[in-house]
Length: 407
Image 1: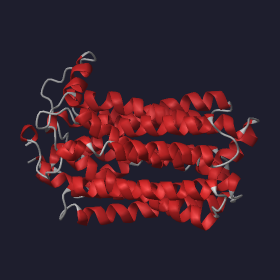
Image 2: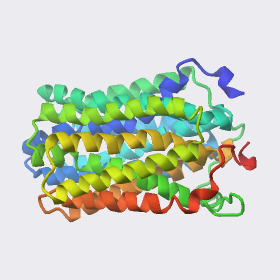
Image 3: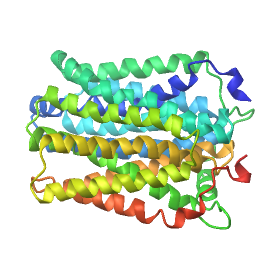
Image 4: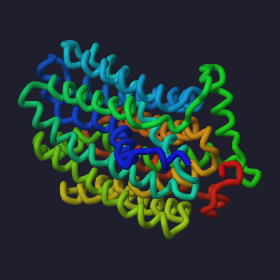
C-alpha cells in the first residue's frame, strides 16, 4: 500500500493543505471594517468578496478534483498552491476594492484547486474501511486554522491589512516544500494525459453511480452539502452577527469566532473515536437531526426577540460543531462508494456541493438583508430542512461496508 511510503506527518500536512481555505477567509474577516475604511468603500462591498471567495474555491475544487484523477495529485496540488501564492501577493499590493475582489476569486480558485487533492490522497493511500478516522484526523488538524486565523488577522492589522495577505503568501509557500521534496504522488500516472472533455464523463460516473440499484450519490452529496452549508452561512454573516447585531469589537469577534473552530476541533476529535465503533451513516443521520433541532431553536429565539449574545454563541457553536462530526461520517461513507482512481472527482462532488450550497444560501441571506438576523436564520432553516428531508431516501446506505466497486 502507498501509505507505507508516506512520511509520518502526512495527515498533518493534508490538514494544513485543506486549511488553505480557512486561512485565506478567516484571517481576512476581522479586517473587513478597517479595509473598507482605508479603501473608501462600504463594508458591504468588501463583504461580497466572502461569497466570491466561496464560489472561486468551489470552482477550483470542481476542476482540480477530476484533473487530479487524470494527471496525479502532486501536479494539481503544486499548481494550485503556486497560484494561491501569486494571487495573495498581488492582493497585498492592491489599492482598489474591485481589484481585490477579483484577485480573491483567483486566490480562492488556486486554494480550491490544491486542497481538493487532500481527501483524494486519503482515499488513495488507505483502505476504504479506514478512511473515516483518517478523514476525521485531517479535518481536526484543518480546524486549527479557524481558531488561530482570526486572531492572527487581528494581530497583523497593527501592521496594516496588507500584512494579513503576506502571511498567507508565507503559509502557502511553506506547503510547497514537502509536496515537492518528500511526499510522493499517491496516484502516480506513468503517462499523464489531460482531457478537459473527459471531466464531464468523470462526473457523470460519480453522479450516475448506483448503490443497490439506486442513484444515491447525488442525493447523498446534496444532503451533506446542505448540512455543512450551515457552517458557510454563518461564516458569511459572522461579522454582521457579532459585530453589528451584538456590537462586538474586533478582538471579541476573533474570540467568539474562534469558539466555533474549537467546537469543530472537539467534534472532529470525538468523531475519530466514534467512527471506529459506530456505523458512519447512523452517526451522520443522528447529527443532521440534532443540527436541525438546534437551528430551529435559534430561529425561535430570533423571532421572539429573546436571543442574547451568550445564547447566540452557544447555539451557533453547537450548530457549527455538528459539521465536525457529520462531515467525516458522511464523507467516509460517500468516498467508500468509489474506487481510489475516482477519489478526486468524488471529493469534488462532495465538497463543491457544500461550498455552492453554502455560498448560495449566504448570498440569499445577504439579498434578503433587513438589518436583523431573521434572513440569516431563515436560510439556515431552509438548509437543515433539505438535509433532514434527504435522509429519507438515504436509508438504503445503512451498511458500514464499502461498495464492492470501491474495494
